[in-house]
Image (cartoon, rainbow, N blue to C red; front, top):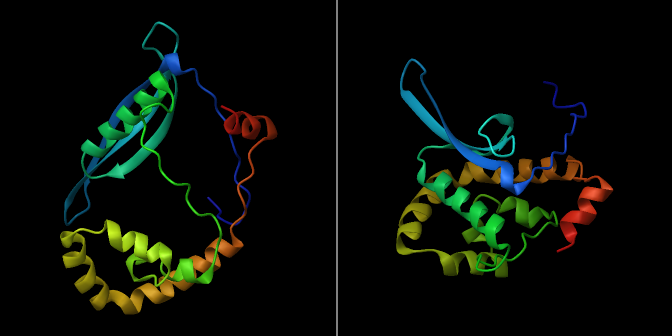
Length: 171
């Protein structure tokens, strides 16, 4: 897989009535440790059967299944009732700035309003872990943040097909 060539894009649409979820477990021994990870896959089946037509990974590389069950419960709630009763999250800021990239992995150190919002949500446990961890590894996060800025500047903007984009923006 060459990261410098344009990768093919496939847009898939599924009927809510035919979607199910599967939790997959990947496990193995790498010579030093036994590792296992879990993933939740959306499975499209033929109507009225459990015969699989297509699979799409929704979320993967998670060490436990609890988060995956919560993700699927969130999806089921949306499939059954739409946006009613779902938590409202503010849209993620899309602009790319050097400051945001520099603090991408240590948001609580950001001196702006964004950093204040993160600090307000932090618990005592978050502070107890993050402060010593960042103090010991701060020197590594600066070049990683700069690398993030460069990568995001060169990354192509996502462009959806016009009909899919229009459908996703309408209620």
